Length: 86
Image (cartoon, rainbow, N blue to C red):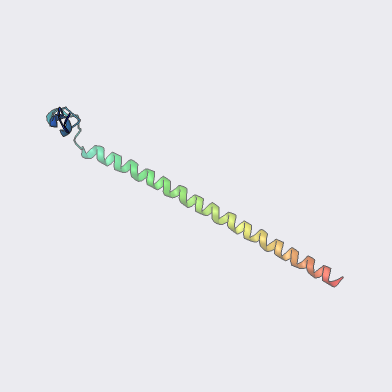
């Protein structure tokens, strides 16, 4: 069999056999688009708030860790001084 023999070029054109006039596509409605945009903005604002809360929580935890580390360093330094004196 030769290459391309028995193949129809019609099958290669468009897998969707529905004529363009009858395809189910909804035209964009401005009021619907505005509702989607409002919802998207709300979600973006919620996401931003979540990120800001997470950043603030991380800052607090880092600050606590730094304070504990500084306390441990100070205790360790004091302990070494006591051991050196005796």
